[in-house]
Each structure stands twice: as C-alpha cells, then as structure tokens.
Image: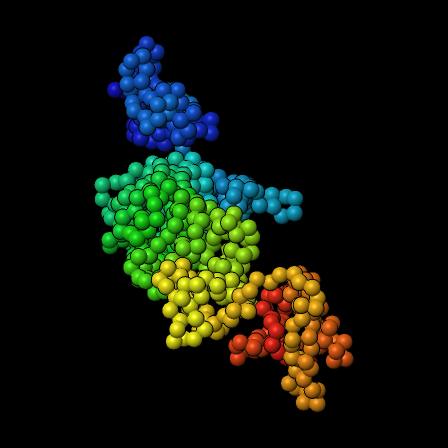
Length: 536
C-alpha cells in the first residue's frame, strides 16, 4: 500500500495528538466508500471515539473500549517532534529566542524576557549548564541522530518526559542512552510498548536512581518485565496504574529504598507479602489502594516480623482501615518511625481524632512522626499513661494483677493490647482508684491531697495542701499549667514565670516535667498523693 507523504512509514503503533486528545494509530489505509488515506485511532479518552474500529460491518482495527476508536485524516494528526526540538522550543535556540524555565514560562529580568544573544559558544554553554530539564507535554516522540543530544546538553541529571508521544521503551532508550549522567526520569502518562528483551536496554538507564511511571496503565507483571532495564533503581513512583496483584521480585528491584503504589487497586492486603522482603526498602506508599487491614502472621502479637526489615516510613491514608488491630500489627515492624494515616475510619467510633492519634502513639513504640507531625517526649508520655489507665479495667478483668506473681492476662487481651505489659513495666501497674472514671461531685467530695516541695530551697518546708478537684480534675480545660504557676506564686511568693514544675507520682518513682504551659493538668494524670516539685 502506498502511503501519503504526510504519513510516517511506521505510523501504525505511533502516538499522536489531535485537538489536545492523545491516541495511538492502529490502522492506516482506505475506508470505502470514502476516498484517500485514513488513520484509525484508538483514543486514550474513549469518549473522544465513536466505535470499536468497525465501519459498516468491517473491522479495520481493535479497541479496548467499544467507543474508543475513530478515523481521522493524516494531516490532522500531530506525530510529534524530536527531543532537541522540544528542548530548544522550551529553553531557547539559535537566534534571539526567549528563554523558558522548566515549566515553559519565559524567564524575565524585571519585565523584559531574557533572550539568547551572542556567539554560538555562549549558547552552547547555556545548554551545557542545564542539569534539570522538563519537556513534559511537548509532543516528544523520538530521539535525534546518534550523539546529537549528548553534544548539545550532556549534563542533564533530571529529565521530565511526562505526557509526550513516546510509544516504546526503545524510543526512550534512544534518548536516555545519550544522557550518561541521568539519575531522575519521569515517564508518566506515556503508553510504552515493552520490547522482547528489556535487559538489552539496561545501558541506557545505567545510572538511573529515580523513575516515575504514573498513569501508564501498567500491571505489576509488566513492571517486573521492565525492571531488568533499571539495575540501579532506588526510587520507583508507580501510582495510578493497574497494579492489583503483586509477585515477588526475583533478581530485580533489589536496590529500592522507596516504592510508591498509591492509587492502585490492590486486590487485598495479602499482596504485600510479595514485596515484604525487598532488602533496602525504607519508604512504602500505599495510599488509596483499597486496603482494609494489614497483618504480619509470621510472628506473635508482641514480636517483630521479618517482613519489611528496613521500612521507616509507611503511608496508608485514604484507605478503609477501621480496626485498631491493624495498628497493633504495625508495631511488629522493627524499623517503623513515620506513619501517614490521617483519615482515621476509627474516628467514627472514638468520636475524636485526637484520641485516635493518642491511641496510635501508645500502640507504636518507635513512632517519631505521625501525619507529618513530630511526636514529642511529652506527647508520647501522656498518650502511654492515658492508654495504661483507659484499658486498666479490661486488663484486670482479663486476669491482670498488680502483683507480678498473679499477673496473667488472657491471650485475647494480650492480642488486642500487645504493648500493655510493656507500659506496665515502664510506668507500673494501674491502681483501682486510678482507673475510676472521673465524675463531677460536690466540692467537699473532690479534694486532692498534694505535697508541694521546693528541693532547691531547703528552708522552704513542704506544704501539704488539699486542693479542690473541681480545679484540678473536673475543670481540666481551664486549669492549665500556666494557671498552676499562678496558684504556686500566691503560695510561695515567687514569680510564676520563674518556676520550673515537675511532679512525682505516688505510684511511680519517676520525676515528670510539666513544662508545657498550655497543657491541662489532666494531661499529666496528677492524683491524690502525688508530689509537685517547684524550682526557681
């Protein structure tokens, strides 16, 4: 078949753009009774098409969607440009051309656009200096002649090729092979055909450390098929693909430190075992993947799993996790320090997002950052003390006892609260009085007996004071540490701002700072018999 000069000889399989719509050419030829050459196009957006490649009973090409195809004349299709044309269009070229930044916006000096002036040598030095380049959505479809790219811009480290007209990994390799320093590559929103021997292209990605292939419609099997191309890959951003079933990577992806699988429709949490033994994986992003739970069944509730041995950061937000049993499972991860889990489904049950945050902190012993907010020493201490008190009655009903010889909580309680014994070891067993629900009573029935000592002032005798609990307990929202300073100022005749406050619990031989003026006393769980220490 003789094709028009406007149709490339390799048109079938090529990517095109027409009126801002992207598609793939599936057919070139005549479509009777119309005359002339037509392109049969499968559009990325099936709403742009009209049929499945069939016209008047004859199927000219196939589509994955029943309305994904249509015919257009060749002259309407844009088959794209070479890589350097896109670079020069965006960053400047021969002549007095305006220079653009990586987003395609003109660079300006004041109100005037910066233009290329001067010798060719000056212009070349400008391209030599380009380390980070973005030609996203620039209709790039192919490379230039051999070594032409490396001669013009040889020092590129980071390249954004997202949303272009590249149609195969071979075409990508023809570009990247000339960029020997390339470490970061974004190929998102490109439909790339996988060649029969991907490992043959590994030299084109020899130094690649970070790769984004998002919104590409890839399965995990296809990712593994491509993986031999990326021998040194450390960060893989694979969100919004078609990844539902995972397989264990064998001999590939072993250098990964970050894996982003967000917005993929994972079949279930059991898929994660297949990536659980990546030896260097430190960051795992599973946001919006449909997860309802997580579990690591290779170890008992209070043990540490062999899975994800180096994992420090985990994102599981925007899922359907509603049970604290998943949080218990996360404590089995031996290296977990940061967690993103902001949209708690548990809030509906607990009625308070702050309470859920405290419970998560108490359950995860090594967590340092929750939802991008650092966990202070005070916050952790308060969360653990509250947890110990909150579940104290359940612990006793399950067989827990203040006497270590009699302390035998049942398996059900230990499975639901695997850290509870650790908290007892740390803070002591809760007393019955400590576990009673705080209620509003008459003032005469709510007096706390506290001892106030000034350890650095031996001449100041200890003060035994009974303070109304309506101040210390039932009015916790208003009785902050700042107001306690005012109370002690009146008792000791010392400026409140100069006071340093700590307390020693009657049940624990431990001095605890009260250094946050905005916190209520309930935060520190002060009770009758405790001793407040005052220094200045």
